[in-house]
Amino acid sequence: MTIVLERPARTTGPDSTPRDPRTFVPAEQWTKLTGLLMRDYPYDSVMAERVLGQAIAYLITAIEHRGQGLGLGPGHIIDIGVHAMILDTMAYAEFCERYNGGAYLHHVPLVEMKGDGSVTRTADLIARAGFHVDRPLWAADSTKCTPCRPGEDGH
Image 1 (cartoon, rainbow, N blue to C red):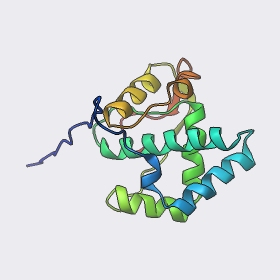
Image 2: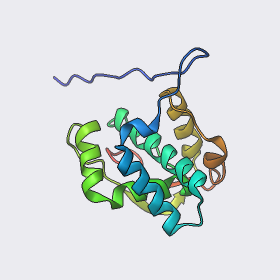
Image 3: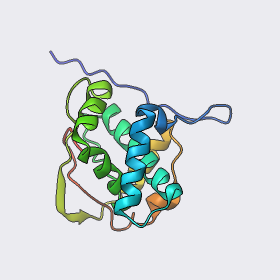
């Protein structure tokens, strides 16, 4: 027999504080990642922090809903932040160890973009998980959707 434990989605109400993506990585890692984003993209510190914060919120939400086959995926802008996280492999392995029970959360890209509304659905799930959603970043390329393959324990 298989038992599946469902985690209820966290929601924010008028009296609650959104979950802070900064609390999921050490301060020095946050600084390093925003620096890498500013080095590699035409981002100032504000944009780098926006992208990184949304990427971490996405990754945590994907981890919290792993195995549910929801077809989650970020658009291109958020995926830049996800890639910054993944490319620092030692820190990403530690992140997965801490928040994904030691299992590596794989990135499974597709060549073609999915035009199926998954980016908007993902942003909505992140909001229900208790994170602030930077809607302009998610909406910027939501019609093109995501290059992530659905239905796996990855993103």
